[in-house]
Length: 581
Image (cartoon, rainbow, N blue to C red; front, side, top):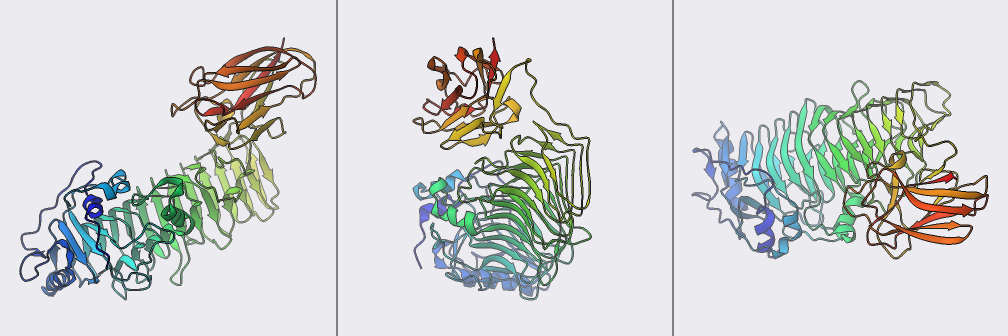
């Protein structure tokens, strides 16, 4: 066994976000550090036997009991199996904050709280869980860390960290637990756990997060946060690349009502995956939850036909995919859908891809910048089942907003608002109702010629790396932006001028929410007399027309305005206006 790094473990719980909560031991608790157990809590001595004896003794009372592990670091080289009615309780000092883990190797602090070092099952995924809970069992106030795990692609496989006993176990609880680097975190599915309760779980699962299946009575998951606080090093992070390409955060199979609230995952291949197993399909209600920067934020293989999957007041960054195997209703109410910029290898051009026989609905949702890399042409594609989109806001102005293919049985697209011209394509052979939708185009003075970055007629063009985004006060709601550079990113607005003559030229750009815009962004006007470069301060006068001057132009498309990223900050390409004088 590799000797664990005391600096790393020292920092695992030496961090705080919010308030501190300390647990006092039950006076009748079985203390693992006292006789007859004698756990050393030094991080080197194997304390498996001490923990297991205390857990077994607590279960042998017939009334259940609490096994208490005082603050310290305990090496558990084996597996812990619970009898019914036992709680393992540690000292839960702090809610973790991620930056401490990024610099863990530099830490040299005393270990607070209760930390278990897990080493069993290294190199395989199919062994017994590190901790197996039985009926009416609970683990709370514990941090679990795998000292032999590596920050690499791929990382070392391990079995599940927390599971239930073979044959299933109802009423299992996980509360106030930190799992630093498990390969697989929580398995309440392989054997099943009805009426389970997971609350305040913070973890960085490297391959699988939480698996639910065989739950035949209501399960609850609240305030779960899955994110890369261990080993994360930005876009070049090898471990993070493995997670984004392979890992799934929430995998939900058969559950007869699952309530998921305030739960979140980021940088996973799939945020929420709803699957059909031998036991059946899921029925899930999700509130105030989200998947951020996931190639598939939501992936629905199937859901129960009478109840389905319902997201409410949630934020979802990434693709929404309902597969052709789905038979139940999938609902999104009051949700936001956004694109993710860290998807360099993701080339699928459709971000909401709806198939299957079930009904998919969007009510009072908003869709904004689903494809920041500007490779997509469709926001929402439906090729099967039925669809309703009502009272939603579409802010992508250079996309087909809704595309109904022939296999769609029925659809209602009613009462929506579009920034820019609504683009709805209806090739369905079913019953489709479209109406009372409001689109919008920015009003300008008579005769003005505006070329916006949403133009799809070739009048706007970019070269180099540009990202679609929003800064507030954008013309037609969206803009393109490029990081400061040497001029390798260029944007060109090329109007078709019917008459030659003198034109006033204006540029429009949105706000600077991150305070990183250039104060000297170069805009080149190519006119009949040559080129004129004007440097514009993008930190000022956002959301209005800014004059570049008056110039003579010939008729046709020879004249243009070009912006580049040869500036002292990020540059913006939004809209340009030409007004005949």
